[in-house]
Image (cartoon, rainbow, N blue to C red):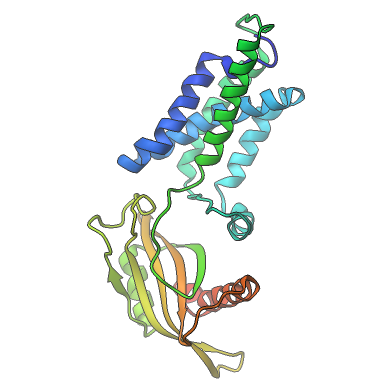
Length: 283
């Protein structure tokens, strides 16, 4: 196999087809732990081989770099970068922190071997072969991008989108009780037939919780504003570990804010406010 023929390796092609099938059919249909891990295993074969095809000089180190990037991506250290991407890209990036995904790193030695060992000889002097490589590489790029992009969902209405996720080291019921102990209501809106499980981003309309009338205080504990309501999801990923994602806030004033600069500024301010007055107190 020549250095530019890795994308024609049977294992690469099988993993590429698996990645596409999983992200576009198996995940939306079944949405279980197996489908969640399948993309990681297949992706860690496809991603380094695809980069080695684009940049042949990277073949000696690309598998190692891929492993390091995957380790960082699955931790909270990547959250600031993801927040920036969410604000700048026209689509939402999906990332779930689950350290059991690290098992997928076991396939990187296989990817490294495919990239660096010439086990198959292919004549690459004709147009059909060149077109095949270009076609497979294009599909690979699409599959790699699509695996981190959740399908579109219909979010509950609100004034300012927040899109910030936190991990609370308590059970879901304990988290709800802690919010109520602060004097706030916690109302659940099912919004669809299926309850919120691992499939929370796979439904057209997501269920959510809502807390009303959160008073904002200044540094002197003087009330200066009121958030009409905050909508969020609660998901117990593991025992005594709950993820809460703030979807949006609705302001008490009427009107529709159009300027993205204003929305960006208010998003930052209200995110900090909710962290200070709710999240930090229930952690």
